[in-house]
Length: 144
Image (tube, rainbow, N blue to C red; front, side):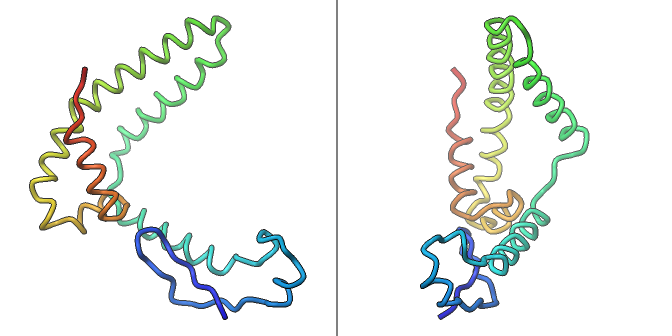
């Protein structure tokens, strides 16, 4: 008997890795088994999926990183109530952006969803089902 790596997207590894039954009998701890082969193959698959996904423009990725870092630094402020209120205000501003941009982008992609579902999933770096779920989420997002 052997094992093979797999992913939630349906991908299955090509290599099989034998199970050392002596180790299984001697050790009841699943963490004691050598899973480096299947894990490495799965990790390579994830890297491949991420490599085919669209990437954020560098300036946008930098801005989002700066927002994340600045929000994280708020935790260091002495006045925790004010810091948390500031975080919530920043979250509100981000939600406004998402609520304005997300539904329109999802609707444009959603119109072509059936014809290009695999390409949309690949661009998002996810499965077709997860891509459909994400599109539906943003298509029906309503800002209060």
